[in-house]
Length: 608
Image (cartoon, rainbow, N blue to C red; front, side, top):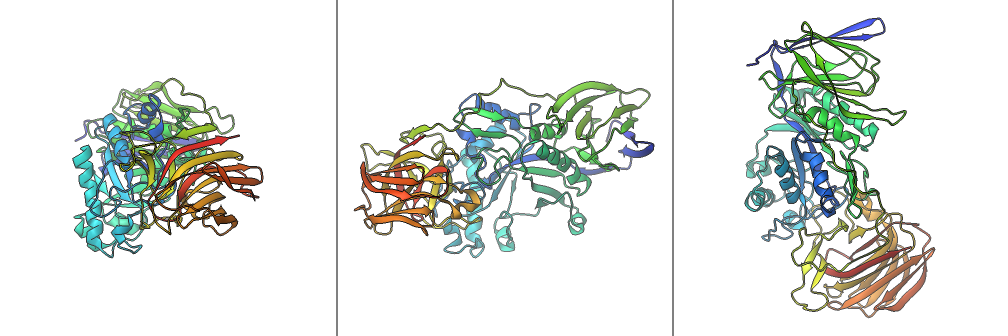
Protein backbone atom coordinates (compact mmCIF):
# COMPACT_ATOMS: atom_id res chain seq x y z
CA UNK A 1 0.00 0.00 0.00
CA UNK A 2 1.14 3.53 -0.72
CA UNK A 3 1.42 5.90 2.16
CA UNK A 4 0.45 8.80 -0.13
CA UNK A 5 -1.85 9.27 -3.04
CA UNK A 6 0.37 10.90 -5.64
CA UNK A 7 -1.81 13.11 -7.77
CA UNK A 8 -0.01 15.46 -10.15
CA UNK A 9 -1.37 17.68 -12.86
CA UNK A 10 1.41 18.78 -15.19
CA UNK A 11 0.85 21.73 -17.44
CA UNK A 12 3.11 22.25 -20.45
CA UNK A 13 2.86 25.74 -21.90
CA UNK A 14 4.27 26.40 -25.36
CA UNK A 15 3.45 29.87 -26.54
CA UNK A 16 -0.24 30.29 -25.87
CA UNK A 17 -0.96 26.56 -25.88
CA UNK A 18 -1.33 24.54 -22.71
CA UNK A 19 -0.90 20.80 -22.38
CA UNK A 20 -1.87 18.90 -19.25
CA UNK A 21 -0.34 15.68 -18.00
CA UNK A 22 -1.57 13.73 -15.00
CA UNK A 23 0.53 11.51 -12.76
CA UNK A 24 -1.75 9.53 -10.51
CA UNK A 25 -1.33 6.29 -8.56
CA UNK A 26 -5.01 5.95 -7.66
CA UNK A 27 -5.76 4.08 -10.89
CA UNK A 28 -3.17 1.44 -10.04
CA UNK A 29 0.47 0.91 -10.84
CA UNK A 30 2.29 -0.01 -14.01
CA UNK A 31 5.01 -2.61 -14.45
CA UNK A 32 7.75 -3.42 -11.95
CA UNK A 33 11.06 -1.70 -12.68
CA UNK A 34 13.96 -4.14 -13.13
CA UNK A 35 16.91 -1.77 -13.40
CA UNK A 36 19.44 -0.16 -15.73
CA UNK A 37 22.60 -2.02 -16.71
CA UNK A 38 25.77 -2.21 -18.77
CA UNK A 39 27.19 -4.99 -20.94
CA UNK A 40 30.80 -6.14 -20.80
CA UNK A 41 31.41 -8.36 -23.79
CA UNK A 42 30.28 -8.91 -27.31
CA UNK A 43 33.19 -8.67 -27.23
CA UNK A 44 36.33 -7.80 -25.31
CA UNK A 45 35.00 -4.30 -24.64
CA UNK A 46 36.52 -4.24 -21.12
CA UNK A 47 39.86 -5.64 -22.26
CA UNK A 48 42.09 -2.70 -21.29
CA UNK A 49 40.35 -1.92 -18.00
CA UNK A 50 42.13 -4.69 -16.10
CA UNK A 51 45.53 -3.22 -16.96
CA UNK A 52 44.93 0.10 -15.19
CA UNK A 53 47.02 0.63 -12.10
CA UNK A 54 45.49 1.62 -8.80
CA UNK A 55 43.91 3.86 -7.74
CA UNK A 56 42.61 4.66 -11.22
CA UNK A 57 41.12 1.24 -11.84
CA UNK A 58 39.09 1.41 -8.63
CA UNK A 59 38.00 4.95 -9.45
CA UNK A 60 36.65 3.79 -12.80
CA UNK A 61 34.81 0.89 -11.20
CA UNK A 62 33.27 3.24 -8.64
CA UNK A 63 31.90 5.49 -11.38
CA UNK A 64 30.23 2.45 -12.92
CA UNK A 65 28.95 0.47 -9.96
CA UNK A 66 29.17 2.29 -6.63
CA UNK A 67 25.68 3.29 -5.43
CA UNK A 68 24.98 7.01 -5.19
CA UNK A 69 28.27 7.92 -6.83
CA UNK A 70 28.11 7.70 -10.63
CA UNK A 71 26.14 5.47 -12.99
CA UNK A 72 25.18 3.31 -9.98
CA UNK A 73 24.22 0.44 -12.28
CA UNK A 74 21.66 -2.12 -11.16
CA UNK A 75 22.68 -4.83 -13.67
CA UNK A 76 25.92 -6.19 -15.10
CA UNK A 77 25.68 -8.40 -18.16
CA UNK A 78 28.80 -10.27 -19.32
CA UNK A 79 29.82 -12.44 -22.21
CA UNK A 80 30.32 -16.13 -21.59
CA UNK A 81 33.59 -16.26 -23.51
CA UNK A 82 33.71 -18.60 -26.49
CA UNK A 83 37.30 -18.24 -27.82
CA UNK A 84 36.02 -16.30 -30.85
CA UNK A 85 35.78 -12.78 -32.22
CA UNK A 86 32.55 -11.19 -31.03
CA UNK A 87 32.92 -7.51 -32.06
CA UNK A 88 36.14 -5.97 -30.66
CA UNK A 89 38.08 -9.09 -29.78
CA UNK A 90 37.93 -12.60 -28.43
CA UNK A 91 37.10 -13.55 -24.86
CA UNK A 92 38.49 -16.85 -23.55
CA UNK A 93 36.19 -19.74 -22.84
CA UNK A 94 36.20 -21.48 -19.47
CA UNK A 95 36.58 -24.75 -21.42
CA UNK A 96 38.98 -24.56 -24.36
CA UNK A 97 38.63 -28.32 -24.69
CA UNK A 98 36.06 -30.85 -23.56
CA UNK A 99 36.36 -31.88 -19.94
CA UNK A 100 39.05 -29.31 -19.06
CA UNK A 101 37.56 -26.36 -17.21
CA UNK A 102 39.41 -23.29 -15.97
CA UNK A 103 37.26 -20.69 -14.25
CA UNK A 104 40.00 -18.09 -13.89
CA UNK A 105 40.52 -17.20 -17.55
CA UNK A 106 39.74 -13.73 -18.82
CA UNK A 107 38.44 -10.84 -16.72
CA UNK A 108 34.65 -11.16 -16.58
CA UNK A 109 34.82 -13.13 -13.28
CA UNK A 110 36.91 -10.33 -11.81
CA UNK A 111 34.56 -7.66 -13.13
CA UNK A 112 31.48 -9.34 -11.67
CA UNK A 113 33.17 -9.61 -8.29
CA UNK A 114 34.21 -5.95 -8.38
CA UNK A 115 30.65 -4.95 -9.23
CA UNK A 116 29.28 -7.09 -6.37
CA UNK A 117 31.87 -5.64 -4.01
CA UNK A 118 30.43 -2.18 -4.65
CA UNK A 119 26.78 -3.16 -4.93
CA UNK A 120 25.90 -6.53 -3.38
CA UNK A 121 22.42 -6.26 -4.89
CA UNK A 122 23.56 -5.90 -8.50
CA UNK A 123 22.00 -8.48 -10.84
CA UNK A 124 24.32 -10.62 -12.98
CA UNK A 125 23.55 -11.93 -16.46
CA UNK A 126 25.58 -14.27 -18.67
CA UNK A 127 25.17 -14.69 -22.43
CA UNK A 128 27.22 -16.67 -24.97
CA UNK A 129 28.11 -15.10 -28.32
CA UNK A 130 30.34 -17.96 -29.50
CA UNK A 131 31.35 -21.44 -28.38
CA UNK A 132 34.58 -23.44 -28.47
CA UNK A 133 34.81 -25.69 -31.50
CA UNK A 134 34.30 -28.91 -29.54
CA UNK A 135 30.80 -27.77 -28.49
CA UNK A 136 29.70 -27.89 -32.13
CA UNK A 137 31.64 -31.13 -32.69
CA UNK A 138 32.99 -29.99 -36.03
CA UNK A 139 29.97 -27.89 -37.05
CA UNK A 140 29.15 -24.21 -36.81
CA UNK A 141 25.89 -24.94 -34.97
CA UNK A 142 25.75 -25.44 -31.18
CA UNK A 143 22.34 -27.13 -31.20
CA UNK A 144 23.16 -30.27 -33.18
CA UNK A 145 24.21 -31.66 -29.81
CA UNK A 146 22.04 -29.67 -27.36
CA UNK A 147 23.06 -31.77 -24.37
CA UNK A 148 26.71 -30.84 -24.94
CA UNK A 149 25.86 -27.13 -25.22
CA UNK A 150 23.62 -27.26 -22.17
CA UNK A 151 26.34 -28.91 -20.06
CA UNK A 152 28.82 -26.30 -21.26
CA UNK A 153 26.64 -23.32 -20.23
CA UNK A 154 25.55 -24.88 -16.95
CA UNK A 155 29.20 -25.52 -16.08
CA UNK A 156 29.82 -21.77 -16.39
CA UNK A 157 26.99 -21.06 -13.96
CA UNK A 158 28.28 -23.64 -11.47
CA UNK A 159 31.83 -22.36 -11.91
CA UNK A 160 30.72 -18.83 -11.08
CA UNK A 161 29.28 -20.06 -7.80
CA UNK A 162 31.90 -22.64 -6.85
CA UNK A 163 35.02 -20.64 -7.65
CA UNK A 164 33.87 -17.04 -7.22
CA UNK A 165 30.76 -17.24 -5.02
CA UNK A 166 28.76 -15.47 -7.72
CA UNK A 167 25.06 -16.17 -8.20
CA UNK A 168 24.04 -15.68 -11.82
CA UNK A 169 20.52 -14.23 -11.96
CA UNK A 170 19.76 -14.63 -15.66
CA UNK A 171 21.20 -16.60 -18.58
CA UNK A 172 20.66 -15.81 -22.23
CA UNK A 173 20.51 -18.42 -24.98
CA UNK A 174 22.72 -17.38 -27.92
CA UNK A 175 23.32 -13.75 -28.78
CA UNK A 176 21.15 -12.61 -31.70
CA UNK A 177 20.80 -16.14 -33.08
CA UNK A 178 18.00 -18.69 -33.18
CA UNK A 179 17.20 -20.72 -30.09
CA UNK A 180 16.52 -24.42 -29.71
CA UNK A 181 13.69 -25.63 -27.41
CA UNK A 182 15.44 -28.93 -26.65
CA UNK A 183 18.51 -27.06 -25.49
CA UNK A 184 16.41 -24.79 -23.28
CA UNK A 185 14.74 -27.77 -21.59
CA UNK A 186 18.08 -29.45 -21.01
CA UNK A 187 19.38 -26.27 -19.37
CA UNK A 188 16.25 -26.19 -17.19
CA UNK A 189 15.69 -22.66 -18.42
CA UNK A 190 12.33 -20.97 -18.31
CA UNK A 191 11.05 -17.95 -20.16
CA UNK A 192 11.02 -15.56 -17.22
CA UNK A 193 11.10 -12.59 -19.56
CA UNK A 194 11.27 -11.57 -23.17
CA UNK A 195 14.14 -9.41 -24.28
CA UNK A 196 15.13 -7.73 -27.51
CA UNK A 197 18.15 -5.84 -28.80
CA UNK A 198 17.84 -2.29 -30.14
CA UNK A 199 14.02 -2.15 -30.13
CA UNK A 200 13.80 1.49 -31.10
CA UNK A 201 11.66 1.95 -27.92
CA UNK A 202 8.86 -0.15 -29.45
CA UNK A 203 7.43 -3.54 -28.46
CA UNK A 204 5.36 -5.80 -30.69
CA UNK A 205 1.76 -6.39 -29.64
CA UNK A 206 2.24 -10.14 -29.20
CA UNK A 207 4.96 -9.61 -26.59
CA UNK A 208 2.80 -7.21 -24.62
CA UNK A 209 -0.05 -9.73 -24.58
CA UNK A 210 2.11 -12.32 -22.83
CA UNK A 211 2.22 -10.07 -19.75
CA UNK A 212 5.78 -11.25 -19.14
CA UNK A 213 8.64 -8.92 -18.26
CA UNK A 214 9.96 -7.08 -21.30
CA UNK A 215 13.57 -5.90 -21.45
CA UNK A 216 15.81 -4.10 -23.88
CA UNK A 217 18.72 -6.36 -23.02
CA UNK A 218 21.14 -4.61 -25.40
CA UNK A 219 20.66 -1.02 -26.46
CA UNK A 220 22.40 2.32 -27.10
CA UNK A 221 25.55 1.33 -29.10
CA UNK A 222 26.41 4.99 -29.66
CA UNK A 223 29.42 7.27 -29.22
CA UNK A 224 29.65 8.44 -25.63
CA UNK A 225 29.71 12.12 -26.54
CA UNK A 226 26.85 14.51 -25.86
CA UNK A 227 24.87 13.23 -28.84
CA UNK A 228 25.13 9.75 -27.39
CA UNK A 229 24.19 11.05 -23.96
CA UNK A 230 21.03 12.63 -25.36
CA UNK A 231 20.20 9.38 -27.13
CA UNK A 232 20.70 7.41 -23.91
CA UNK A 233 18.54 9.82 -21.90
CA UNK A 234 15.69 9.40 -24.40
CA UNK A 235 16.03 5.59 -24.43
CA UNK A 236 15.91 5.27 -20.65
CA UNK A 237 12.52 6.94 -20.53
CA UNK A 238 10.96 5.95 -23.81
CA UNK A 239 11.73 2.24 -23.66
CA UNK A 240 9.08 2.16 -20.96
CA UNK A 241 6.82 4.93 -22.22
CA UNK A 242 6.56 3.50 -25.73
CA UNK A 243 7.43 -0.17 -25.22
CA UNK A 244 6.72 -0.97 -21.55
CA UNK A 245 10.26 -2.34 -21.22
CA UNK A 246 11.32 -2.39 -17.58
CA UNK A 247 15.07 -2.77 -18.03
CA UNK A 248 17.57 -1.27 -20.46
CA UNK A 249 21.16 -2.48 -20.78
CA UNK A 250 23.82 -0.40 -22.51
CA UNK A 251 26.19 -1.90 -25.05
CA UNK A 252 28.67 -1.38 -24.00
CA UNK A 253 29.55 -0.84 -20.37
CA UNK A 254 32.81 0.99 -20.96
CA UNK A 255 34.93 1.89 -23.98
CA UNK A 256 38.01 0.06 -22.74
CA UNK A 257 39.42 -1.25 -26.01
CA UNK A 258 41.56 0.24 -28.77
CA UNK A 259 39.52 3.09 -30.23
CA UNK A 260 40.22 2.11 -33.85
CA UNK A 261 38.47 -1.22 -33.38
CA UNK A 262 34.77 -1.65 -34.20
CA UNK A 263 32.49 0.87 -32.47
CA UNK A 264 35.42 2.69 -30.87
CA UNK A 265 34.28 5.24 -28.30
CA UNK A 266 30.96 3.62 -27.44
CA UNK A 267 30.05 2.84 -23.84
CA UNK A 268 29.01 4.86 -20.82
CA UNK A 269 32.54 6.15 -20.22
CA UNK A 270 36.03 5.81 -21.68
CA UNK A 271 39.06 4.04 -20.22
CA UNK A 272 41.33 3.03 -23.10
CA UNK A 273 44.75 4.20 -21.83
CA UNK A 274 45.92 1.94 -19.02
CA UNK A 275 49.54 2.83 -19.86
CA UNK A 276 48.86 6.46 -18.86
CA UNK A 277 46.06 6.02 -16.31
CA UNK A 278 43.89 8.48 -18.22
CA UNK A 279 40.11 7.95 -18.32
CA UNK A 280 37.07 10.13 -19.00
CA UNK A 281 33.79 10.13 -17.10
CA UNK A 282 31.60 10.83 -20.11
CA UNK A 283 28.16 12.46 -20.01
CA UNK A 284 26.20 9.16 -20.42
CA UNK A 285 27.32 8.26 -16.89
CA UNK A 286 25.33 11.19 -15.55
CA UNK A 287 22.31 10.55 -17.77
CA UNK A 288 22.24 7.10 -16.19
CA UNK A 289 22.48 8.53 -12.67
CA UNK A 290 19.29 10.53 -13.18
CA UNK A 291 17.40 7.23 -13.02
CA UNK A 292 19.62 4.78 -11.15
CA UNK A 293 20.41 6.90 -8.10
CA UNK A 294 16.75 7.59 -7.37
CA UNK A 295 15.09 4.26 -8.14
CA UNK A 296 15.82 0.61 -7.46
CA UNK A 297 14.69 -2.69 -8.94
CA UNK A 298 11.42 -3.52 -7.26
CA UNK A 299 10.00 -0.03 -7.61
CA UNK A 300 6.95 0.34 -9.87
CA UNK A 301 6.20 2.64 -12.74
CA UNK A 302 3.01 4.61 -12.44
CA UNK A 303 0.53 4.02 -15.24
CA UNK A 304 0.32 7.71 -15.98
CA UNK A 305 3.58 8.24 -17.85
CA UNK A 306 4.08 9.37 -21.42
CA UNK A 307 5.52 11.53 -24.16
CA UNK A 308 5.28 15.29 -24.07
CA UNK A 309 3.24 16.72 -26.90
CA UNK A 310 6.02 18.97 -28.12
CA UNK A 311 8.82 16.47 -27.62
CA UNK A 312 10.45 14.69 -24.73
CA UNK A 313 9.01 12.25 -22.22
CA UNK A 314 8.40 11.69 -18.53
CA UNK A 315 8.23 8.66 -16.27
CA UNK A 316 7.30 8.35 -12.63
CA UNK A 317 8.16 5.51 -10.25
CA UNK A 318 7.34 4.68 -6.65
CA UNK A 319 8.66 2.26 -4.06
CA UNK A 320 5.07 1.87 -2.75
CA UNK A 321 6.30 3.23 0.58
CA UNK A 322 5.67 6.87 -0.16
CA UNK A 323 8.75 7.66 -2.24
CA UNK A 324 8.35 9.09 -5.71
CA UNK A 325 10.84 9.78 -8.53
CA UNK A 326 9.95 11.62 -11.74
CA UNK A 327 12.46 11.73 -14.63
CA UNK A 328 11.80 14.22 -17.42
CA UNK A 329 13.89 14.54 -20.58
CA UNK A 330 13.53 17.15 -23.32
CA UNK A 331 16.05 15.93 -25.87
CA UNK A 332 13.90 16.67 -28.90
CA UNK A 333 13.15 20.35 -28.75
CA UNK A 334 10.72 21.31 -25.98
CA UNK A 335 10.84 25.12 -25.67
CA UNK A 336 10.45 26.50 -22.15
CA UNK A 337 7.34 24.72 -20.92
CA UNK A 338 6.14 25.00 -17.35
CA UNK A 339 5.41 22.04 -15.14
CA UNK A 340 3.01 22.68 -12.27
CA UNK A 341 2.26 19.77 -9.97
CA UNK A 342 0.06 19.05 -7.01
CA UNK A 343 0.90 16.43 -4.41
CA UNK A 344 0.65 15.43 -0.79
CA UNK A 345 4.34 16.26 -0.33
CA UNK A 346 6.27 19.04 1.38
CA UNK A 347 9.39 19.40 -0.77
CA UNK A 348 11.19 17.55 -3.55
CA UNK A 349 14.86 17.10 -4.40
CA UNK A 350 15.92 18.26 -7.86
CA UNK A 351 18.83 17.07 -10.02
CA UNK A 352 19.50 18.75 -13.33
CA UNK A 353 21.52 18.21 -16.52
CA UNK A 354 21.82 20.36 -19.63
CA UNK A 355 23.61 19.29 -22.82
CA UNK A 356 24.77 22.48 -24.50
CA UNK A 357 25.62 21.52 -28.08
CA UNK A 358 26.53 25.07 -29.07
CA UNK A 359 29.01 26.05 -26.39
CA UNK A 360 29.88 22.53 -25.14
CA UNK A 361 29.56 23.98 -21.66
CA UNK A 362 27.38 21.21 -20.28
CA UNK A 363 25.79 21.06 -16.87
CA UNK A 364 25.87 17.44 -15.74
CA UNK A 365 23.99 15.98 -12.80
CA UNK A 366 23.88 19.15 -10.75
CA UNK A 367 21.95 19.28 -7.52
CA UNK A 368 19.53 22.19 -7.61
CA UNK A 369 17.65 23.82 -4.78
CA UNK A 370 14.78 21.66 -3.53
CA UNK A 371 11.36 22.53 -4.83
CA UNK A 372 9.10 23.78 -2.09
CA UNK A 373 5.55 22.53 -2.42
CA UNK A 374 2.99 25.19 -1.53
CA UNK A 375 -0.65 24.28 -1.21
CA UNK A 376 0.08 21.01 -3.00
CA UNK A 377 1.71 22.48 -6.11
CA UNK A 378 5.04 23.45 -7.64
CA UNK A 379 6.25 24.92 -10.92
CA UNK A 380 9.30 23.95 -12.99
CA UNK A 381 10.58 25.62 -16.15
CA UNK A 382 12.22 23.46 -18.84
CA UNK A 383 14.37 24.19 -21.86
CA UNK A 384 15.68 22.01 -24.69
CA UNK A 385 18.14 19.13 -24.14
CA UNK A 386 17.60 18.85 -20.42
CA UNK A 387 17.07 16.07 -17.93
CA UNK A 388 15.39 16.64 -14.58
CA UNK A 389 14.97 14.21 -11.72
CA UNK A 390 12.37 15.34 -9.19
CA UNK A 391 12.33 13.03 -6.23
CA UNK A 392 11.67 12.40 -2.56
CA UNK A 393 14.95 10.41 -2.41
CA UNK A 394 17.67 12.50 -0.77
CA UNK A 395 20.70 10.18 -1.05
CA UNK A 396 21.87 11.15 -4.54
CA UNK A 397 25.48 12.29 -4.97
CA UNK A 398 27.75 13.30 -7.81
CA UNK A 399 30.87 11.32 -7.03
CA UNK A 400 34.27 12.73 -7.90
CA UNK A 401 37.95 11.89 -7.68
CA UNK A 402 41.05 13.97 -8.41
CA UNK A 403 41.67 14.40 -12.11
CA UNK A 404 43.32 11.31 -13.64
CA UNK A 405 46.66 11.64 -15.45
CA UNK A 406 46.73 13.38 -18.80
CA UNK A 407 46.18 11.41 -21.98
CA UNK A 408 49.34 9.91 -23.46
CA UNK A 409 49.89 7.78 -26.58
CA UNK A 410 51.01 4.19 -26.25
CA UNK A 411 54.75 4.11 -25.36
CA UNK A 412 56.98 4.19 -28.43
CA UNK A 413 59.39 1.83 -26.73
CA UNK A 414 57.66 -1.15 -25.14
CA UNK A 415 58.72 -4.66 -24.17
CA UNK A 416 57.37 -7.69 -22.32
CA UNK A 417 59.13 -10.93 -21.45
CA UNK A 418 55.94 -12.44 -19.97
CA UNK A 419 57.84 -13.51 -16.85
CA UNK A 420 55.23 -13.57 -14.13
CA UNK A 421 54.74 -16.56 -11.85
CA UNK A 422 51.18 -15.93 -10.66
CA UNK A 423 49.55 -13.52 -13.11
CA UNK A 424 46.36 -11.86 -11.86
CA UNK A 425 44.84 -12.25 -15.33
CA UNK A 426 45.41 -14.82 -18.05
CA UNK A 427 46.22 -12.26 -20.75
CA UNK A 428 49.35 -10.14 -21.01
CA UNK A 429 48.86 -6.37 -20.67
CA UNK A 430 47.76 -4.40 -23.73
CA UNK A 431 47.58 -7.41 -26.09
CA UNK A 432 44.10 -7.53 -27.60
CA UNK A 433 43.28 -10.91 -29.13
CA UNK A 434 41.30 -10.64 -32.38
CA UNK A 435 41.23 -14.30 -33.39
CA UNK A 436 42.39 -17.06 -31.07
CA UNK A 437 43.36 -16.70 -27.41
CA UNK A 438 46.85 -15.80 -26.16
CA UNK A 439 47.55 -16.67 -22.51
CA UNK A 440 50.40 -16.57 -20.04
CA UNK A 441 52.10 -19.98 -20.06
CA UNK A 442 54.49 -21.70 -17.68
CA UNK A 443 56.77 -23.75 -19.91
CA UNK A 444 57.64 -26.72 -17.70
CA UNK A 445 59.95 -28.21 -20.34
CA UNK A 446 62.20 -25.15 -20.35
CA UNK A 447 64.01 -24.13 -17.18
CA UNK A 448 66.04 -21.50 -18.98
CA UNK A 449 65.26 -18.28 -20.81
CA UNK A 450 61.83 -19.34 -22.05
CA UNK A 451 60.28 -20.70 -18.87
CA UNK A 452 57.52 -18.07 -19.04
CA UNK A 453 55.90 -17.32 -22.38
CA UNK A 454 52.73 -16.16 -24.12
CA UNK A 455 50.94 -19.08 -25.80
CA UNK A 456 48.18 -19.27 -28.39
CA UNK A 457 45.85 -22.00 -27.09
CA UNK A 458 42.85 -22.34 -29.44
CA UNK A 459 43.47 -25.38 -31.64
CA UNK A 460 40.21 -25.69 -33.59
CA UNK A 461 37.93 -23.16 -35.19
CA UNK A 462 35.25 -22.02 -32.70
CA UNK A 463 31.53 -21.93 -33.33
CA UNK A 464 31.83 -18.34 -34.42
CA UNK A 465 29.56 -15.31 -34.12
CA UNK A 466 31.55 -12.82 -36.21
CA UNK A 467 33.94 -13.40 -39.12
CA UNK A 468 37.09 -14.62 -37.37
CA UNK A 469 40.23 -14.82 -39.44
CA UNK A 470 41.56 -18.26 -40.37
CA UNK A 471 44.77 -17.22 -38.64
CA UNK A 472 45.05 -16.23 -34.99
CA UNK A 473 46.18 -12.70 -34.17
CA UNK A 474 46.68 -10.41 -31.18
CA UNK A 475 47.27 -6.69 -31.70
CA UNK A 476 49.08 -4.15 -29.53
CA UNK A 477 50.18 -0.53 -29.57
CA UNK A 478 49.23 2.67 -31.34
CA UNK A 479 47.15 2.60 -34.52
CA UNK A 480 48.99 5.71 -35.75
CA UNK A 481 52.37 3.91 -35.83
CA UNK A 482 54.07 4.13 -39.24
CA UNK A 483 57.82 3.49 -38.97
CA UNK A 484 58.81 0.93 -36.36
CA UNK A 485 60.88 -2.10 -35.45
CA UNK A 486 59.20 -5.05 -33.74
CA UNK A 487 60.88 -8.24 -32.57
CA UNK A 488 59.85 -11.39 -30.75
CA UNK A 489 61.14 -14.86 -29.93
CA UNK A 490 58.81 -17.46 -31.41
CA UNK A 491 58.30 -21.21 -31.08
CA UNK A 492 56.30 -23.23 -33.60
CA UNK A 493 54.77 -26.29 -31.93
CA UNK A 494 53.04 -27.97 -34.90
CA UNK A 495 55.25 -30.04 -37.27
CA UNK A 496 55.21 -29.44 -41.03
CA UNK A 497 52.01 -27.36 -41.25
CA UNK A 498 52.66 -25.02 -38.32
CA UNK A 499 53.67 -21.41 -38.60
CA UNK A 500 53.81 -18.05 -36.81
CA UNK A 501 54.04 -14.40 -37.78
CA UNK A 502 55.09 -10.98 -36.57
CA UNK A 503 53.35 -7.94 -38.07
CA UNK A 504 53.35 -4.16 -38.29
CA UNK A 505 50.90 -1.54 -39.59
CA UNK A 506 47.94 -3.87 -39.05
CA UNK A 507 44.94 -1.80 -40.10
CA UNK A 508 41.93 -3.95 -39.20
CA UNK A 509 40.62 -5.82 -36.20
CA UNK A 510 37.27 -6.64 -34.68
CA UNK A 511 34.68 -7.99 -37.07
CA UNK A 512 36.88 -6.94 -40.02
CA UNK A 513 39.97 -8.82 -38.87
CA UNK A 514 39.77 -11.23 -41.80
CA UNK A 515 40.42 -8.29 -44.13
CA UNK A 516 43.40 -6.95 -42.16
CA UNK A 517 46.26 -5.52 -44.19
CA UNK A 518 49.77 -4.69 -43.00
CA UNK A 519 53.23 -6.21 -43.17
CA UNK A 520 53.09 -9.86 -42.07
CA UNK A 521 56.36 -11.76 -41.63
CA UNK A 522 55.73 -15.52 -41.49
CA UNK A 523 57.99 -18.46 -40.78
CA UNK A 524 56.84 -22.05 -41.11
CA UNK A 525 57.78 -25.47 -39.75
CA UNK A 526 58.40 -26.67 -43.31
CA UNK A 527 61.52 -24.48 -43.57
CA UNK A 528 60.09 -21.52 -45.50
CA UNK A 529 59.27 -17.88 -44.89
CA UNK A 530 56.83 -15.51 -46.51
CA UNK A 531 56.09 -11.80 -46.33
CA UNK A 532 52.55 -10.74 -47.16
CA UNK A 533 50.58 -7.53 -47.31
CA UNK A 534 47.53 -9.12 -45.72
CA UNK A 535 46.66 -11.61 -43.00
CA UNK A 536 45.13 -13.98 -45.54
CA UNK A 537 48.41 -14.26 -47.45
CA UNK A 538 46.93 -13.37 -50.81
CA UNK A 539 49.42 -10.63 -51.67
CA UNK A 540 52.98 -11.94 -51.34
CA UNK A 541 55.79 -9.38 -51.03
CA UNK A 542 58.66 -11.85 -50.58
CA UNK A 543 59.20 -15.56 -49.93
CA UNK A 544 61.93 -18.18 -49.75
CA UNK A 545 63.74 -20.71 -47.58
CA UNK A 546 64.28 -20.06 -43.89
CA UNK A 547 65.39 -23.42 -42.50
CA UNK A 548 62.89 -23.08 -39.67
CA UNK A 549 61.16 -26.00 -38.01
CA UNK A 550 58.99 -26.81 -35.03
CA UNK A 551 60.36 -27.06 -31.49
CA UNK A 552 63.13 -24.50 -31.97
CA UNK A 553 63.12 -20.94 -30.65
CA UNK A 554 63.80 -18.22 -33.26
CA UNK A 555 64.04 -14.45 -32.97
CA UNK A 556 62.09 -12.57 -35.61
CA UNK A 557 62.72 -8.88 -36.25
CA UNK A 558 60.58 -6.78 -38.59
CA UNK A 559 61.53 -3.24 -39.56
CA UNK A 560 59.23 -1.00 -41.56
CA UNK A 561 60.22 2.50 -42.70
CA UNK A 562 58.45 4.47 -45.37
CA UNK A 563 57.65 2.19 -48.28
CA UNK A 564 60.17 -0.52 -47.38
CA UNK A 565 60.27 -3.45 -44.95
CA UNK A 566 63.13 -5.73 -43.87
CA UNK A 567 63.09 -8.94 -41.86
CA UNK A 568 65.74 -10.70 -39.81
CA UNK A 569 65.99 -14.19 -38.40
CA UNK A 570 68.17 -14.62 -35.30
CA UNK A 571 69.77 -11.24 -35.99
CA UNK A 572 70.70 -11.94 -39.64
CA UNK A 573 68.86 -10.42 -42.62
CA UNK A 574 66.55 -12.97 -44.23
CA UNK A 575 64.85 -10.56 -46.64
CA UNK A 576 64.98 -6.82 -47.22
CA UNK A 577 63.45 -3.89 -49.05
CA UNK A 578 60.04 -5.44 -49.62
CA UNK A 579 57.88 -2.66 -51.07
CA UNK A 580 54.93 -1.69 -48.89
CA UNK A 581 52.57 0.84 -50.50
CA UNK A 582 49.78 0.42 -47.98
CA UNK A 583 48.60 0.64 -45.28
CA UNK A 584 50.37 3.74 -44.01
CA UNK A 585 49.90 2.96 -40.31
CA UNK A 586 48.49 0.44 -37.84
CA UNK A 587 49.12 -1.75 -34.80
CA UNK A 588 51.89 -4.25 -34.18
CA UNK A 589 50.74 -7.86 -33.92
CA UNK A 590 51.72 -11.49 -33.53
CA UNK A 591 49.91 -14.70 -34.34
CA UNK A 592 49.83 -18.12 -35.95
CA UNK A 593 49.22 -19.62 -39.38
CA UNK A 594 46.16 -21.56 -38.19
CA UNK A 595 44.40 -22.59 -34.99
CA UNK A 596 47.46 -24.17 -33.41
CA UNK A 597 49.66 -24.04 -30.33
CA UNK A 598 52.59 -21.63 -30.56
CA UNK A 599 54.64 -19.61 -28.06
CA UNK A 600 56.02 -16.08 -27.97
CA UNK A 601 58.59 -14.45 -25.73
CA UNK A 602 60.67 -11.27 -25.33
CA UNK A 603 58.38 -9.04 -27.36
CA UNK A 604 59.80 -5.59 -28.17
CA UNK A 605 58.60 -2.66 -30.23
CA UNK A 606 60.34 0.62 -31.05
CA UNK A 607 58.35 3.21 -32.96
CA UNK A 608 59.80 6.37 -34.47
